[in-house]
Amino acid sequence: MTLLDKDGVHLDVADAVATVTLTNPAKRNAQTPALWRALAEAGRLLPGSVRVVVLRGEGRSFSAGLDRQAFTPEGFEGEPSFTDMARGSEAELDAIIEEYQRAFTWWRRNDIISIAAVQGHAIGAGFQLALACDLRVCADDAQFAMRETSLGLVPDLTGTHPLVTLVGYARALEICVTGRFVHAEEAERTGLANLVVPAAELDAAVRDLTAAVLASPRDAVIETKALLRGAQDRTYDEQRVAEREAQGRRLRDLAAGPA
Image (cartoon, rainbow, N blue to C red):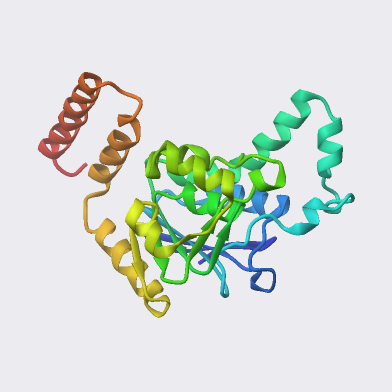
């Protein structure tokens, strides 16, 4: 069932699995503010029955980053250009960027597991979109790069937190300030990718991972994700308490039986 198809974003739902597809392969799925709004809308449209969300890009690349038109003086029609944004007040600039970030935040909700299927280039905003997901399955031709710093900017689409969490501060800093490519083998070795497979096997690998996630009871998956996501912000003893509380909820639910 198709729930959304606009501005380079297609959302399809089949039972407990939603697939979000970037649909502008001619531009290597370059991103625009309109696409970001469509991605945010896709998150709002998810039915409550969805447990896994797969994010993929049509064509040879996952997403080559921000559309180059953003760097022209006129920017995108109907959108504030970078120059217009810089001339606005601090509050106005902050509000614009916050709106853009909404496309990248909902993938980490506790009630879903999000999986990015990455092939070809994932650059800048494309890299950050892959990082927005819980898990990343990559084709062996995948190449990640964070180019914002090379352009005099910073990664601002929520990618810095998961990048540091996955690969550590020193490697994240080096990746960002050099803008170099991280190839699939390094991505898997450093924890950026959960799995790397031949490009022809990418879809099958994502289906297998999706099936494995769905094999576990939903409430247990939700509680486990919440525990793990919060672990880095808790002390060891606080995490022990959180584990006990979560397990108590699970035991009581199991003892109560089906509603």
